Image 1 (cartoon, rainbow, N blue to C red):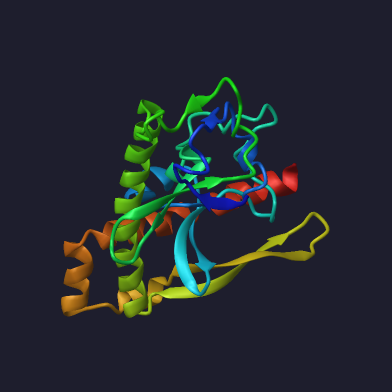
Image 2: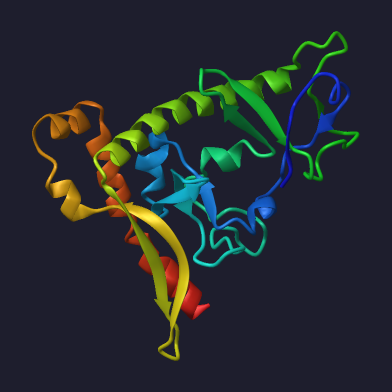
Length: 231
């Protein structure tokens, strides 16, 4: 993927055909999540904290091997009856949230649906947004607001030193251990030691519920491992 800012000059006459299936995500083994998605995502995915330039970012773990998405079926569709992360739904667009508020719209310049003659236009002749782009901006605006809230949640986990690095390992059929990736998780022992004002703060901000969803979601790891070993 090659993300570039959307602008009226370079993309004035651009048309876009949105993905008809999920093949574009077949090589993705994680998908970024916002805190607001934890409750639904925890029903289907292990929620982990992946490293992004030294900053932990909550993600749905889609596969236990780099370049493999266990939720994209052979027909190219997402696994049926499974929550679809917002970061996947919004593709080929994403929001880059600014530190001071607001966001820029980025597009994947390598997406094959750009420039299709039968696609939806992004800009009107006068430079205004088309109804299609307006819908995209509404979705990305929601994503941007959720990103700000998620940053606050992660900052609190870091302040309380609740995240620990763990390497996911899998025992193959021959009994050999394979290291499949390293992510951060909320440590149960450290969480139990949180007391007083810090515990009240986690409760008041709704962070305890998010932590619980994260910890419960980890059991999906066993299912993904079973799928990987059993083929």
